[in-house]
Length: 181
Image 1 (tube, rainbow, N blue to C red):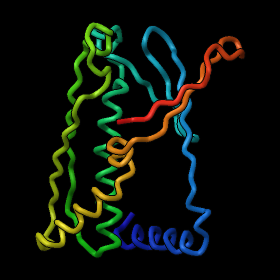
Image 2 (cartoon, rainbow, N blue to C red; image 1 turned 90 degrees about the vertical axis):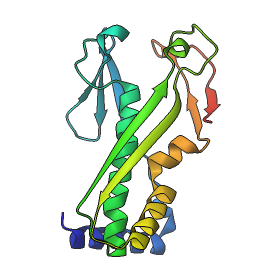
Image 3 (cartoon, helix red, strand yellow; image 1 turned 45 degrees about the vertical axis):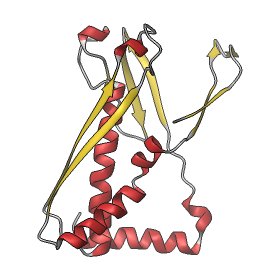
Image 4 (cartoon, rainbow, N blue to C red; image 1 turned 90 degrees about the horizontal axis):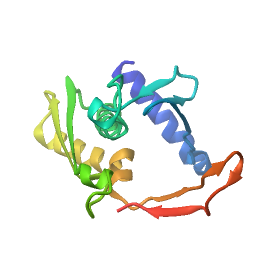
């Protein structure tokens, strides 16, 4: 999609939301299924299922990215999408954007071997932007993207997360809620 077409699509959506703020409330859905061993399948909308696996040292066959790698992919790609979107709206020409994301995880938490979190303890990303735009314009773009990136926001803000488990259709636990952070 060209920068002009992207800008038209986004400004059209923003105008529609301005006229009907209730239309801004979205729900995204993913369905996942354990396939074999630790290999899983994930389905979103009408796309072909995506495989999720673990490396051999974590019991997998290394056939696909693992869940914690998908978190890194989600952050990097969300940043890149937001750069493209906001650059188009702000009239900034981008020649390229890449994001290198690293996650630091102590596997002792994963295996319950120490009192450390099972998930990432720290995430770090580096964004490389190629553009002929002025540094002040790019600084404004960076601030805008980092203030409005949904995945960055989800990872850095306490988000209510609830879950319930069923065994053969019957509830086996009370619904749990966990706040991130």
